[in-house]
Image 1 (cartoon, rainbow, N blue to C red):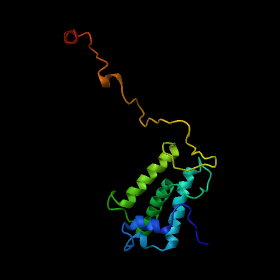
Image 2: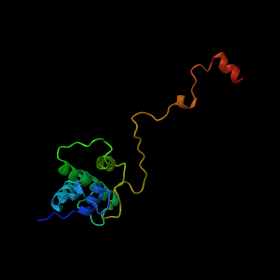
Image 3: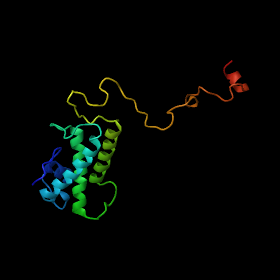
Image 4: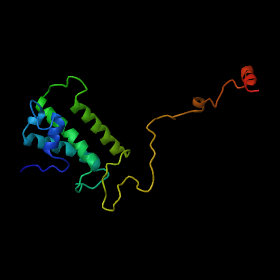
Amino acid sequence: MVYEPQYTDPEKVRQLISRTVGYQGNTAASLDDTIILQAIADAEGEVDGVLRKSWTLPLSPPVPQLVATITEAIAAYNADLVFGGATQYRNDRSHIYLRLKRAQELLKMVDNGQLDAGVVLPDGGTGTGDQEAVVINAYSTALFGPRDFFWWVDDWMSPYWKDAHA
């Protein structure tokens, strides 16, 4: 039985890997469909693991673009791992590696509720608070304090302060 991908197809994954339309050369894009489909299945499982917390799966077509993009990036990385074996990337600037990191960040943001995946629920909502805005402070401390705007002067009673503002 052949796996039927839900969020993307092998050709889109091959395009991400090769970066040149129609060229597969000595890249993971030259792998046969069975391996590419397994890479897609693994990627869809990873994405579904996050989406399952908030949405009913499987998603009904059309699949939101963000979900497809994340899935394609993870699938391209999975296929490249099979192709390259244990070979490490020469550096962290590989387009496949960079796409994976971006996809993981986007997936984390979807999981944390910081990003709407574009999934539409049966009631027409998105599950992210359609009626109100959500403000998220990504910093663990206050962004600004009184000293940041010169509203607070420790020595306001100093002679200089009195002379300058008398």
